[in-house]
Length: 163
Image (tube, rainbow, N blue to C red; front, side):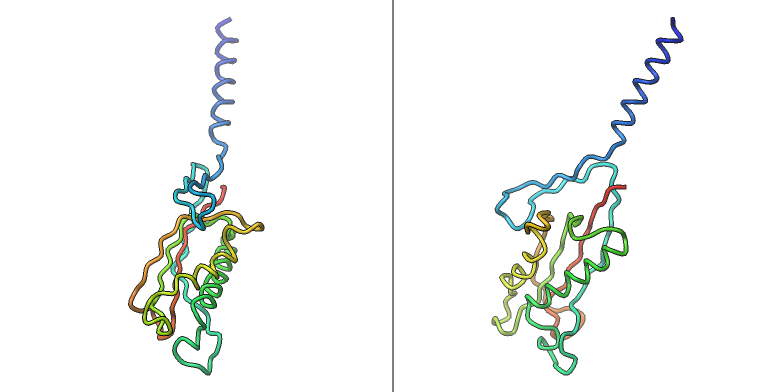
């Protein structure tokens, strides 16, 4: 009788551990109308992917300054596409982004103020859409300069995907 009870207890324990090992979903919280998640919880069972800061691609090699890379919206779109390409090398995509850090240089056309609205126009094309509803938590800061004259946008992300 003890042997049957021990076997039953062992099976119950194994079933419980199997259930615990299954990855839960990522939880994104905050105001549903907001463009970002105010909090993101990544449970056990996910790999974390860190993507270094990406800067914009050149859109006009004959130009100098901002014209070489485009306005803030154009640069944001270019950077997000680069981030997407980097994530794909790791089997992930923009839907897996859980944290984003955006650095914006003051736009000379806007009296040296960051073009937050332009960044948001580009950002909203990829996050919180009908096709890709997931939104990361995010910080956006103005910095004095990036690595090349005319660059206005640099973005780094962390993503999480089920193991």
